[in-house]
Length: 261
Image (cartoon, rainbow, N blue to C red; front, top):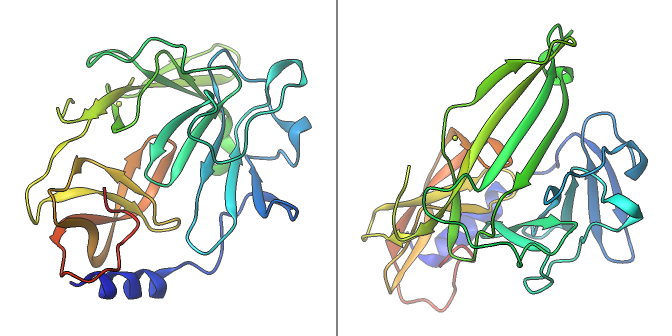
């Protein structure tokens, strides 16, 4: 597939609607804000924990910046919502998404290979009327700084504990993995390794078309969607339909797909 064909394919696949959560639009800055659950504004959000993710930003193709609010910062501090790589309140989620924090997270110690880097805590009702409304609150807390060119990888199986008050808590931990050594749900920050030609290189969300990379394509290659087959994936802050991407040799055209590393 040529670069031009890949761009045409993406244009054909752009979704016509966004997530079905409470949404408000800031016309001055052309930004869409999405609130979780029954929240309709900042007042409906729980307060963030220390080093908790307060928002995720998605730089969507041909659509306004999408800000998914998760919690409100203490002391009426504003959760950063501008796309910025140098504000000291940011970590990367995927190639077109950022995690925003109330505090300066760049001052945290860098994540080590086998460290529990991010903890997801989901509180649910033991007797929900339906699955969608069973989730009462989900928080994500960083324990270290996951630098650029790393990705989040689930470190252990999700553990569930009964809170004794009609609710249960689900804990999931992630690592920060360098795109270099593939380490095995605690989330880890993992460094990207180097891919080979025509090798699987990541998962591209079927809604925003942002890519969770697994490796870095070699020179003269691009990480592109090879076919339109969707499959279900679990990533940090995302569970749903995605496309597999492949390191495809560049055809030589000057067009460049935005997911190229």
